[in-house]
Image 1: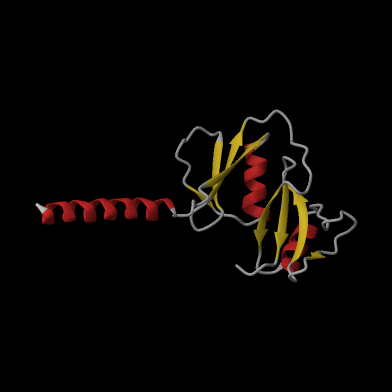
Image 2: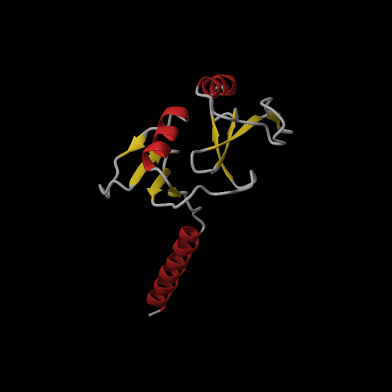
Length: 151
């Protein structure tokens, strides 16, 4: 009888321990959804300017484009917004690129406006950790930070 009680206590402790460990797992970003006015224009911007690849779109309804933005994350563009958004720069998504200078040259070639954090020119802001950054808006007014942080 004592062996049975000890076994039950050990089993209960193992069960409790496994639940605690499972709860300590960090959530993983699955996707970010942006509501856009013109799906084709927004998708083209993210594909051609940011050079983000699309992933298969499961709805097949012509109202969604999905783009791969990380090892396990996607950006969902959803058609249907009535007008572009108005936001402050502090509400933004950030993408790191291998060469900020090459990215800025692409923006210049495509006549896409960008600025530094203060908004007073095209010279990148340098953060205290040495990362250089610029800001631009996508076709729907969503702010994007582009930086040269290592990834």
